[in-house]
Image 1 (cartoon, one colour):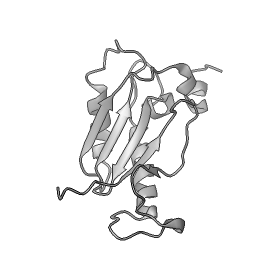
Image 2 (tube, helix red, strand yellow):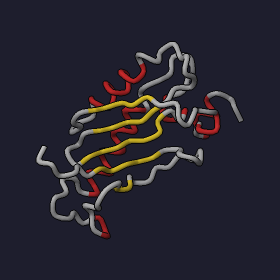
Image 3 (cartoon, helix red, strand yellow):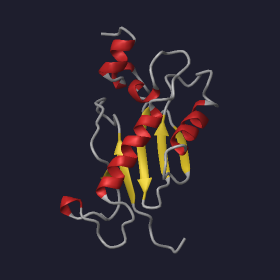
Image 4 (cartoon, one colour):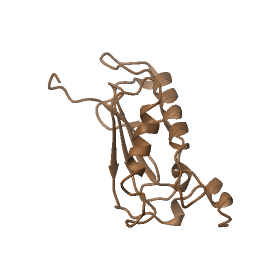
Length: 150
């Protein structure tokens, strides 16, 4: 590393409000995109590349299922944050439906493998957190429908 901070793009899902968003990630450090999505000097990802990579990562996350629940982890609201840096390294904050989940040791590896298979992705780091704890309000309408929880 050259000592410069790495710029990151972050898509935070849920947060304090249980709503899911499909918005383009927001910058967490000095912006490298000017208004209108024009790359600023030093940026390695254009707005279009960032949007495509985000969509591909979300699609990969939707292939990972909790074996006890017939819905993918993204729709269940287990993914709290997707962080993309300019070197295409990915950081994912996620949780489980319960701390005692029988696949607690395996699911982060499944997530890492799924996201790591996305074309153009660099290193993938999955952070497991229980803050805030998961609850059913984080589920999408699609997951509620699949689980008949309306």
